[in-house]
Each structure stands twice: as C-alpha cells, then as structure tokens.
Length: 297
Image (cartoon, rainbow, N blue to C red; front, side, top):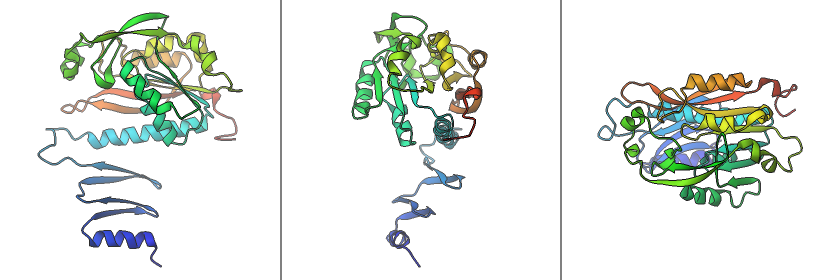
C-alpha cells in the first residue's frame, strides 16, 4: 500500500521537482538539484550541495570531506556524552553559541557552560542561551592565569589572543589587520568550576576548547582539577596559524600525560592545493571513567 508520504513524493516528481528518497519518512526535495548524498550508516545520510564548474575553486575537491568529518565528529561527541554519562559541558571559545546549539540538537540535555569574551559574539551567545535554564554564559576568556589581555578582532570566528604566524598570514587575508583589538578578562578554569557545577550532585564534566591557538593555556588553567574531566575536545594544529601556539604533537602529548586517550581525530580545515590538514578536532577520553555497565546503565 502506498503511503501518503510516497504519494506526496510522487506528486512532487511529476511537477518537475527533484526528489531523493532516503527511506521511511525522509527525503531531499530540491527545485534545482545540485547536491550529493552519501550514506554514512543505516540511519544517517550526508547531503551536501555541489558547486558549479564556474564557481568551483581550482583543485579544491575537499568540501565533501570537510562536511563528512564535521558530521562524524558531531555524532561521535553526541555518543561520547551518552556513553560517559556527561552532565556538564564546558564550552570554551563559544563564539555565537554554535557548539551549544549543536549539543542540544544532538540530544544532550545536561548543563552547558560557555565562555566567550568578544562583545559582538557574546551578545549573540547570550541570545542563543537566554531561554535555556541550564546553559550558563561567562563573559571572559580562560587561560593559565588571572589577567586582562589584548584580543585581536575582525577575524570573524578566528579572533585570538595570539598574533598570526607567518603561515597564518599567508593563508588568511583577514590576518593582515592586527590593529583592531579589545581588552578582555582572562580567568582560570579551576577558579570557576565550583560555581559552574553548583547543583550537580555527581559532576561528570567534559571540556571542549576552540580558542584559536590558546587551548593549551586553557588546559593549564584547570590545574589539578583537570583530573575531574571524563573527556575533552581540542582543536590541534598540524600547521600553526598563530604565533606561539603548540604543534599538535606537543598538545596531544600534554593531554595524554594528563590521562586522556584519543577516541577520534577529525580534519577541520585543509589546504586546497596540497590536501594537507591544517587543524584537527581531537576528541579524548579518560577511559577509567567509562561506566562499567555500559552506556546509560
């Protein structure tokens, strides 16, 4: 028996609309087409738009790879939070709240604690979190010590407390302007944890860092309390965009020395011409904190 859903898809096709049937209750409907669909698992598809020949950048065939990596990382983190029974995510370098929204869309219902010092992004972050009772916002950066520092602005999502490296300046035109700055408060992670975790009976925190080269400073600011985190996520650099930021081998070694082990590595950006990965999202776990009885037990 043909369902109403299938009848609607058939009618759309007869009207000249392109239809991709993804299975029960799911389809992509497009007036122009121009997309690719890749099946990632029995219940997951990756659908991405295709560039026209005239708009496609020379030798740049990595768009689908980036979209796939981002989708897989999101799914991996969502599963991780369930498996490790995480009930508080520290979102450091929250920008406009993209990560927090992604957590909610992925089904996470625990506490989110976001940190963002840049005024424009902070206003949008607060707007994103205003109706969520368990999403806290701190208007500051995190680092190794308590201080007031100069933040470079005008670099969109790449605003940083660090100067751009020679490689970063060559790669991104936005780094040419280093004159637009603001002063931001920097606090230590261990100093804010008690307040952020208040009301959670058995805290199982997860640390996400995306601070444009400053992740190791945030990590250092956790002090001995880093031992309380069941997992973490850091953007690590294979090619350094910021002066003084660590190479990924240095960062991962420090994280491993603190007891974390890699559960996933996902490319964030690549060089179009060479295919070299610039940065990875590195997801790590403290395996001893995995529930003995399995997820959700």
